Image (tube, rainbow, N blue to C red; front, side, top):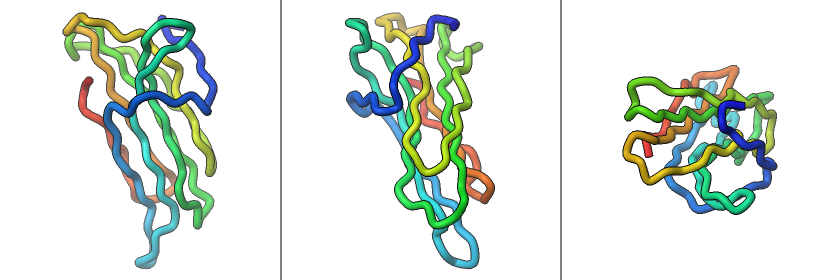
Length: 124
């Protein structure tokens, strides 16, 4: 699947970048989640992947996470996802890292329904 490797939702690695998402309404926090990029070894090869992790789930809120990979310095990219979860942790598939400056990753997340919008890490 475009060079991506499926990994379990429990896969963890070293944190690279991330952010938080919050859905609010009536002055109250309904749901919150963090999203981010991690890297580590999968089947003996260093790879990067994205995740979304809920922290509070006051409302019926879904979360999406996806990862973009560029091999030409950001001029174009392939997207893995979005993957959707309700109240759980979910990961994208993993993609091999490279010493090439042309390869970079970014991870994006969103919560819905609600007003959290879409948020993305910078390219790494």
